[in-house]
Length: 449
Ligand code: HAM
Image 1 (cartoon, rainbow, N blue to C red):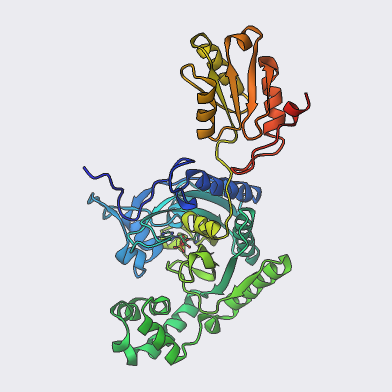
Image 2: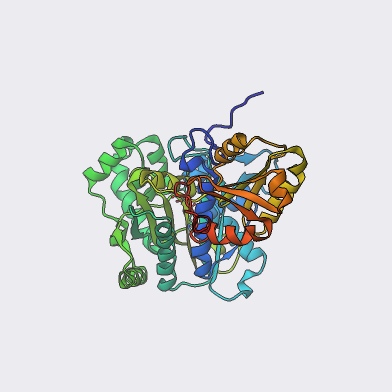
């Protein structure tokens, strides 16, 4: 039996685990998803979930048969069903659009804003920030072709990142045009590269026939050198009138709202469904080649999947990469469960009453209790191991007076508090200011007596 997790996967660990980094911390994960929930739901998005696996043909048609994801990175589930088997989802958009069409969500107020988060699966070469099971926060707006919706989507992405405290993330904005523009660009690229095809990597030779624009995204140094040598014109120069006007509108909204971005005239996304606006979010801490997030408009996807023409736009960011960027900026995250009160009995008869006190505290705060009597020194040691803010001790004398001895651990201040007053005191102290992992609250109520 192997005690090793599969390559490219991570365990999300509890607080206090040895060698904890942000991208391994379950608390840090939940900090990101809760921040995203707050920002996106204030922006009108509704939570939804789709299955972790989908029929393979949905993913092939949705993501695109010429993409690396479909050609090299799909985890197939070994079941040869009528739809060509199942795929562990490599991304969220195809599943959400499938669910939108299948469940008649068109009847809900339009455009419909949806969000989700969860694991995605791609069999990639594993490296820092590149995993085989990773996690995305995903936002989709279905039912509007207006540029204002693209701009709002970008604003929301930036807002999530800002609310997490990140300052070094930048939007790279471009447009991949309408299908006719793409066809003209693909023809241009074919004409340009074909005479030099033998100098391209094997992958890019294949791209030349299937999807030439993906050559520009090649990781091969020789391919990149050839791109520079040939002076390849960017996609942006090939935009038709409508896509160009749409792009100018998106830029206008962002500029009016003060959302900073860098223009990326030759943006290439790794999925085939994009049309018009496309962008990525980058951060130095994650490295130039890896984006924190990416998104764009995908007006053709619903039709591709067998539904009616339905305009849509959305984005996703990788939670692990976001956490790497937060680490690089030295940002902290709050503990998931909030401040803890550790309750312990000093003798065997008080174990059950102490448990009852802890259960009562849970109406207002997180409380744990010792399952057997402890000496005071051990109570404090156990409380500190759990990074408790308070220890509440109950001996027979306190029990006789219907009270507990409450000690604020970081300051050492303690006093006897009647059980009936305990929750009110904890409420005012613990939640007057939500403590972060490295700043315990001072206990004014304890000190004033
Ligand atoms: P994507 O650019 O393929 O877009 O992925 C979005 C983000 O997921 C990336 O920027 C990255 O942070 C993270 N990510 C992707 N692959 C990995 C990996 N192997 N390991 C760690 N993180 C990774 C999409 O998935 C689209 N569905 C986004 C979208 C939504 N477009 C429209 N709506």
